[in-house]
Amino acid sequence: MATPRKPFARPWHNDWWLHKRSYALYMIRELTCIALALYAAVVIYGLGRLADGPEAWNAFVAALRGPGFVTFHLVALVLMLYHTVTWFQLTPKAMPVMRGDEFLPGRYIIGAHFAAWAVVSLIVLVIAGV
Image 1 (spheres, rainbow, N blue to C red):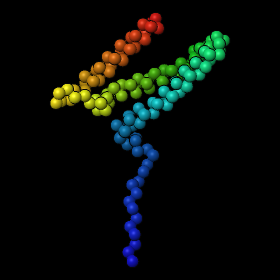
Image 2 (image 1 turned 30 degrees about the vertical axis):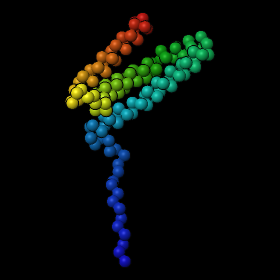
Image 3 (image 1 turned 180 degrees about the vertical axis):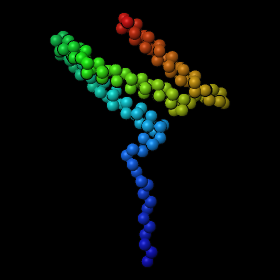
Image 4 (image 1 turned 120 degrees about the vertical axis):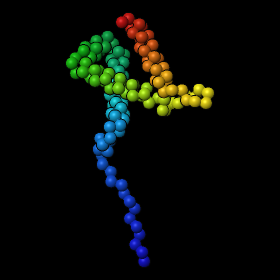
């Protein structure tokens, strides 16, 4: 009687993403969602304080001016900028646009995203009175 073969099990390491630069950059981009989730939690908490009245809102705003929250917001800003730029660079691969029989060059798709981002940012700054 023949013995059954043992199936091949590929060795797996938890640091697989550190062995190739493109994998590491991808994982860093994916981990930026943690900063986004924390930022969303702060905003939702702030909305709750706003609903609780002026005293609760003023205390929340005062807490946001502390060094811990300022640092958090700066780190979150950098991570969100990294996420946005890398996502815009990925867009031509995820959403190729056909123009006739050929694909639209990626630089036009990326440029359109950055232009739309700039216009929306400008509109937000104008509304905010900056």
